[in-house]
Structure formats: C-alpha cells, structure tokens
Length: 99
Image (cartoon, rainbow, N blue to C red; front, side):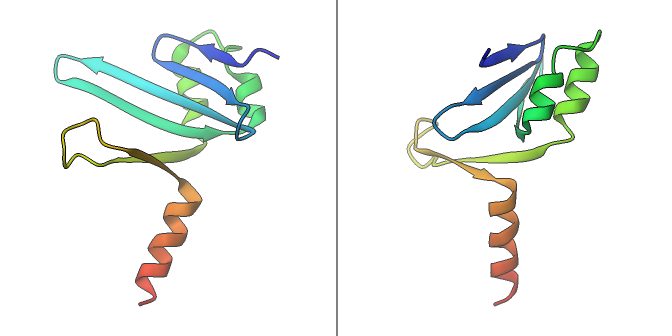
C-alpha cells in the first residue's frame, strides 16, 4: 500500500505505528507559514489525489477532525511537542468545565 500522498499544499500519510491516517495543509506567504493538521479516515485517504484540483483535496481533508499540537516554548522552539486529537481536547474541555 502506498503510505504517502501529496499535492501543492497538502500531504497525507498512513502511520503504521498508530494504525491511523493523517494529513497536513501548509500555506506559505510573505506573512509567514500556517500549518493545519488533521486525522483523516481511510476513505478520505483513498479519495485524495483523485480530484483535478488541489482545492478539492484540501476541502476533503478539512472535513476530518483537526489535530492540535502544543509545544513547550519555555526554552525556545525546540521544546517537547505533544499532539492532541480532537476528541481528547473535547473531553478535557468538558472535564474542566464540570469543575
């Protein structure tokens, strides 16, 4: 199985260690760089690259759950990074609001 697909602004891959599919969309401009990460389904992964336009691929990726990444920047930008899946962030927010 092909484990990586990409277009102009997006990359999708299968993570064999976690048995999950992920995608990232990166935009670069004069103002800087924006990166958006998603956990996609196997179905989304299989459909990526079948469209005529990268915009259509990006729209499909954006239908998936977003992934949040937190980095310890106390000592610069090389601190440990932790990825939080959408459902984990939602559960934590609910737990905190119940206090």
